[in-house]
Image 1 (cartoon, rainbow, N blue to C red):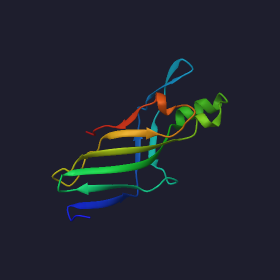
Image 2: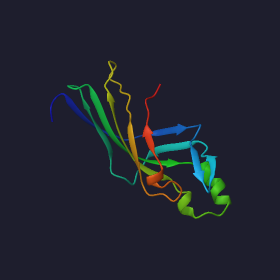
Image 3: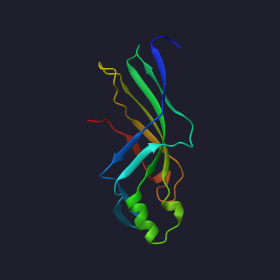
Image 4: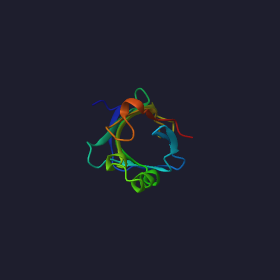
Length: 130
């Protein structure tokens, strides 16, 4: 590996999207409530590369997304547990390496199979932060 490239492993990730997302279910729209995002400990390692020659950062994160508020509502309705389990996803992202050596990553997410959020009908991505 070139001296301009530095490989890294992501060992901790914890994020919350307090506003949640809109979910279509049985012809109605619901809010998911807060989303909790963390590394998927059962998946391969999350890792990336800092390429200082190109000033680009690239990373692949294996995550689990939980929606405990909406899952609780669904459980109270007696739905199949497949619909309330966490969503597994792989986030592939990249972005510029900033002058302070930080980076802001963006990119698509590939969702794993899930009873409530079929991958062919659901889109997700990492958007630029503020």
